[in-house]
Amino acid sequence: MRKNIILCGVGGQGTVLASRLISAAAMARNIPVLSAETIGMAQRGGSVFSHLRMGEGIHSPMIARGEADLLLGFEPGETARMLPFLRPGGQVIVSSRPVTPVMAALSGEAYRAEPMLDYLKAQVPSLLVVDGERAMREVGSPRVLNLILLGAALQSGALGLTEADLLEAMQRLIPGKFYELNLRALRWAGENK
Image (cartoon, rainbow, N blue to C red):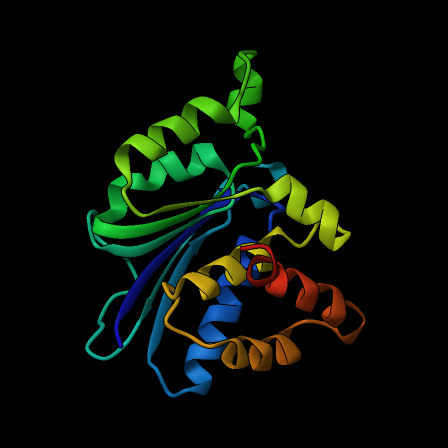
């Protein structure tokens, strides 16, 4: 198995934890993993993205334009911005919930998800839009979008891992008091097909 995955969003959405969970799950199966993250403005609501590559024969963590198999978008605008990295026929899974990035907030212009989602629909044949707002409300926390999107990727088959793989990684990386909440988030997509 060989997978190139880009995770993107804004600071505070859990993109880094999602990347670490995927990496830990792959390593537990002895799948080589390389990753690189940009988290410089993460605490300020700035753009955050991770390149994650799994499989044999990988020599660099960076994914070239047009080579990502999966683009996991925590926010529509950031997803549209990273779209050039998606390979033809690649899968995009995106939350419909907009989070205004710092630069957009400074511009003073309205920031809406609809135009960005329309653009993604026109460009990507294999697009799954997750109602992030509804999912977080139903799961019971605004801090679990990362696990909701991982669950959607798991259900789509685009992740290349099993639920058991992710559960094992979650047990190691998520504190016990948050495990059940995150488990509900991971399973939300499967229960809401």
